[in-house]
Image 1 (tube, rainbow, N blue to C red):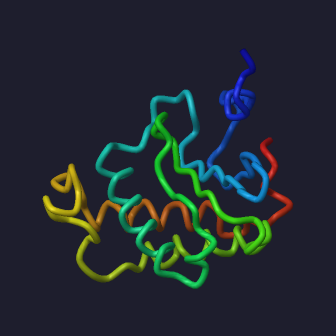
Image 2 (image 1 turned 60 degrees about the vertical axis):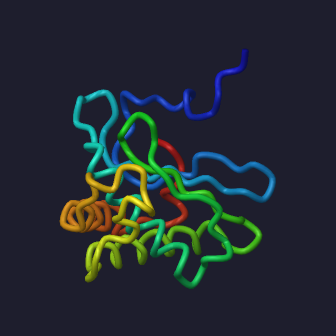
Length: 153
């Protein structure tokens, strides 16, 4: 069996940042790496879930909402994937979208989107303050990121 692309990245040397994971036809997948893998320093379930709710909501209501295909957590608890239509957004546009969305997440002012039993199957572990803290952290990590820095180290 072939190894999938994400298993070909050396997780022992991967640092937090923003990476081009793959292209599948017109679909671009960004790897939004928050934590250094294989260190035991993982996002908690509440952090991951809270960031997911805020960022997915901002992306799906933002200027590039028609280009966004998916935003969600990595199973390894070290970050998130963003999939978007590469025909609508260039790589540079994608980088700028991630930067502005996480800055907006850090400044988010309002109730947690989807925080009810009717809207979410695990609404009790959602926390706006946790999401804002992680968004601010990641916004700082990628503050100077650009298309040239998208390649894995």
